[in-house]
Length: 140
Image (cartoon, rainbow, N blue to C red; front, side, top):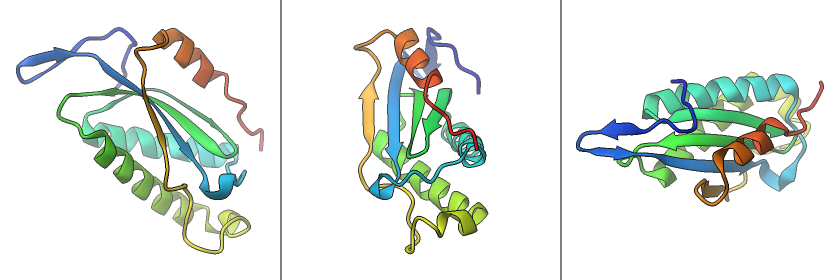
């Protein structure tokens, strides 16, 4: 689902615009993400968002964390969505990049238990989107 920053959506009997900025950080802040892993994470996040009917407006990351700009609907429960996103993405990335991640983790982990979820109403969406676009992606 492709979303634009000002798109108003409707769900049952309401019209809404709920935008969240989600940040997920690797366990122990290990710098384990490569460009290939970030590309795969973006695919996984897009698929999960589609299953939840949540719009993925923007995705980017660095070697130890990712940023997502999300368009939620009122019936979606943010904590359940984040838990599902972390669980599925961790399982698939650890499966697809097990040799690489074994250098960083001896247990089957990837994400820290905590996460940051901010409503995007305080700063203009363009500022947050530009911030996410300008993340320093790994080159290898």
